[in-house]
Amino acid sequence: GAGVSQSPSNKVTEKGKDVELRCDPISGHTALYWYRQSLGQGLEFLIYFQGNSAPDKSGLPSDRFSAERTGGSVSTLTIQRTQQEDSAVYLCASSAPGQRSYEQYFGPGTRLTVT
Amino acid sequence: AQKVTQAQTEISVVEKEDVTLDCVYETRDTTYYLFWYKQPPSGELVFLIRRNSFDEQNEISGRYSWNFQKSTSSFNFTITASQVVDSAVYFCALSEAPEGSNYQLIWGAGTKLIIKP
Image (cartoon, rainbow over the protein chains, first blue to last red):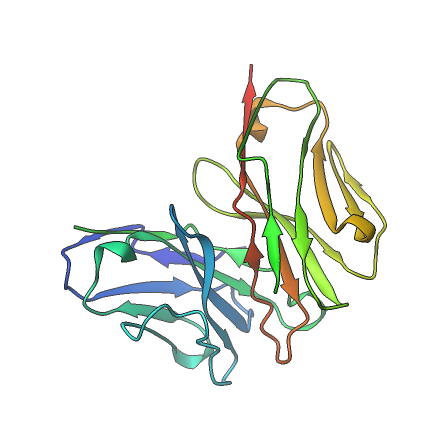
C-alpha cells in the first residue's frame, strides 16, 4: 500500500521567508510525528498529533515553528521567517492505533535549504 | 534523562564479513521500547525492529540479529555475511512509555556502515 508521502521533496528559500511542508500519512494511521534531521543536531522530535487530541508541541525549537493537522489526516509544518539554522531534512512519520502504535513509518523527507 | 549512544561513527568492512553495530541507552523508565532504523543513501528511514523492555529474547531475521541486554543497557545489531546493499546509516532509538500516547523517538547519532565489494 501507499506509504507516508511528503512534499515538496526539496525546498530552497531565502532567509526571512515563510515555508510550508506537507505530510500525507498512511491511510488509517491516527498518530503523526514530525522530526528534523540536521548535521549539527542529528534527529530530533518536533511535534506529535494523535487523532483530534491537542498536539504535543514540546519539541518545536521556537515560536516560528507551527503545525496543524486537518481532518485527522494531512499535516502541514510551517516555518515563519526562516533562518539558516532551519536548514535540515524534515521527516514525517505515522503509526497505526492499537498495539503497534509505537512503530513509526517514515516518509522520504523534505530537504529545506535556507540561503 | 533518556539518551541513546552509538559510539561507532563509521564502520567499513569487506563484503561477507560479519559486523556488529553497538547501541547503549539510558532511561529511568521500567517500560520502554528500542528500535533500529536503516537510512540508505536514498534518505528514507526504514523500520527494522522493535523490542520491548520486558522481552529480552534475542531475535534473528535472516542475516540480521539483535542482542538486547538490560544488564548493560545495550541493544546491539549484527549483520552476518554483509552485502554491499547493507551500506547505509543505521540508527538506534528509544521510546519511553508515554503518559499519553506520544511514543516520540530519542535517537542515537547513527553509525555509517560501508560495505566494500
